[in-house]
Length: 283
Image 1: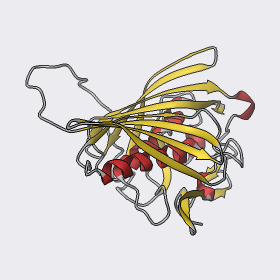
Image 2: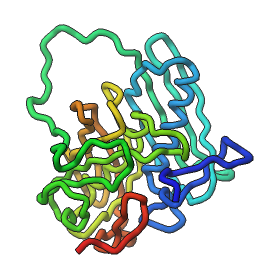
Image 3: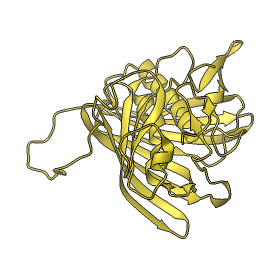
Image 4: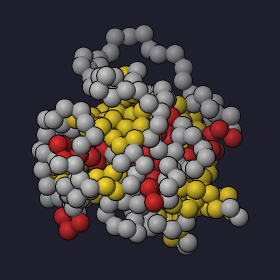
C-alpha cells in the first residue's frame, strides 16, 4: 500500500487517482476531507510556487465540501484571482468527471515588519505533546490524541465527552512527493472534526467547510490541533480550533458541520495502523 492519499495516472499526470488511504470511514466510496483538503492545498501551492511566491505565507485557506468526493480519479485546477506585490489570491476546484465536488480559496500574503504598539494576545496557549511521549517524526503515523486520558494512539481511550487535542504527522498528498508544511497544515485542518465533534458515542457530525488561518508557515509536517470553542444548535455546529507546531502557535481552524447520526463513526469499530490498514480495535 502506498503511504499517500493519491498517485498520478501514468498516462495523464494531471489526474489524481485516490489510494486506499484516502477512503473515509463514512463510506467505502467516499474520500475523507483530509485527502480533499490536501489535494486542493497542493493545487494552490503549485500555482504560487510557479510564480516565485514561495516566501509568501498561506494566511487563509477556505475549503467548501459541498458534494461527497468519491473514490474515483479527479482533477485539481487552480487560477489566480488577484496578484500584487503583497498578496496572491487563488481559487482551486476539485472535479470528478463532470462534477465539481469541492473548492478552495487560498490567500497568500507577503510577510513584512510587525507593528510596534502594545496589543493583547492570550497569555496561555496549547503546546505540543512531550517529546518523550510523542517523539518528533516526519514519517506518517496514527495521530496521537489527548482528552481526559493522556496522549496516546489508542482511540478507544479518547471516546469521551472531554475537550480534545490531536497531534499528527502529515501523509504525503501524492505518492513520490514529500508533504510540504502548508499541505500538512491544510490536510490536518479537516482533522478538526476529531477534536470538536468526537464524543462519547463517536463522531456524529460531518464537516461541510473549514477555514484555516496561518500567521506563518509551519516548521516541518507535524501539526497539532486543540479545541478552543464549540457551539451546536439543532445539529448545526460551529467550532474553533487552535493550530500549532513544535515551535508554537500558527493560527486557527474554524469549522462548520452538520449532524450525521445515521452514519456516526464509532471508534470501537475503527482502528488503523501507521500504514493506514484497518486493524482490530484496541481493548
